[in-house]
Image (cartoon, rainbow, N blue to C red):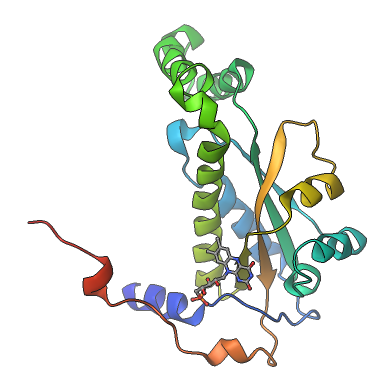
Length: 213
Ligand SMILES: Cc1cc2nc3c(=O)[nH]c(=O)nc-3n(C[C@H](O)[C@H](O)[C@H](O)COP(=O)(O)O)c2cc1C
């Protein structure tokens, strides 16, 4: 298992050129969706939605506002990570309702938890920076997706620095309370992608991992 994980993580790279003719199977895609759904988030609030854009015309438009990067149109699948612009009490309540239903507990028993969340992310000091907070949560899901894809030997490229306002317009997100943050494209590398064989550039373990005994 250890060997397989390290092999997969060494094999993966941020794919620049996808083979547009190769598609992710239904079975693998279901697993990737579950990796997104099962990602952890602070409080478990899941302030995200993952938009899977398979429409070719929309992808073309998105590519135009994403530095014309070919992954946007050529990858088998494209996921746009969107998060809440703000968290309100009703969003927290929907999560409380879900906990009560899934775990079979009475809602009043969750009042303490609910008040803690509301006091923090709805009315507390974090509320003023909530977009930064929700966006941070999205990056956890991105990590889960990338690692799962690597383990399945599916290529991927995480992408940010896109024109998110233009993305929101194209995806009709304006006024919905959701905003795009980043993208992950997934599929299979093209044999023309020279970066596929480039050596990984990482700082040494001693430079990035500090142990305090
Ligand atoms: C959040 C994030 C955003 C990124 N944005 C882009 C991007 O827009 N286009 C791109 O080609 N690569 C993008 N990358 C890929 C990084 O450049 C790449 O992961 C890094 O250089 C390490 O290389 P490796 O992933 O191939 O090991 C992004 C990576 C991350 C984590």
